[in-house]
Length: 238
Image 1 (cartoon, rainbow, N blue to C red):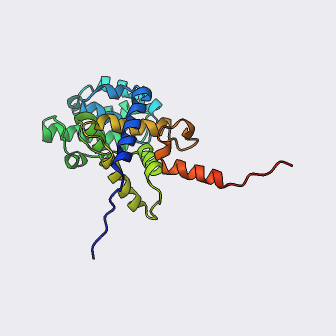
Image 2: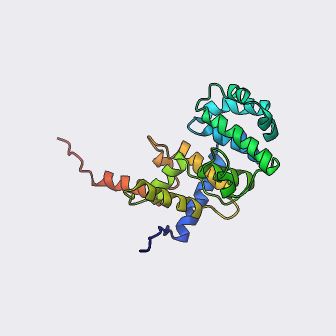
Image 3: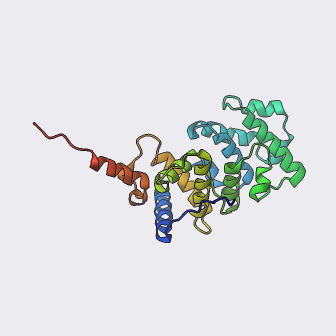
């Protein structure tokens, strides 16, 4: 019995419009974050691990301090577990610090301090899943690797998913394929950053800024909300 594989069916015109409008928005409204000024995979990995289940504002307090203590992956690999744990103190979810430390040691031991570039090799490192591997691959190496964090998931679901699958696994497969399909050639860094910022600043979980959104005519969720509003009967004045 053959298994049907979902393939996104998007008109090239729609893809280009989404890419162009999102990148233009990012150019004018993207956040100025310290980890965006580097292409060092180690520094990018530190930021991505810290950002897991933690707000950006809180990570800003720790990121620079941690890198001053461990400016290179060799420095982190050579540190003791208790020292790394102490440097992470207050940020929470301490398994992240253990995984980051273990990854540093593995990269130094098995890869001579050079980060692997492929998704499979990155995902083989301790505590690195598909999202984090994609972030390092696209932000450090410019690879056309998709990412799917909470913000990206919300944007893609609202804009492109008209009928939500009943199973979460099916939705996840659809969103990963969309995230990969939509990346413009040679612009993975800008596009993935733009998706995350758009979800964080515009297409928020609560009170999304639909009235200011340039993606409105492309957005299935926005169109559904408008149709719902127009179909609601209004009370006549007495």
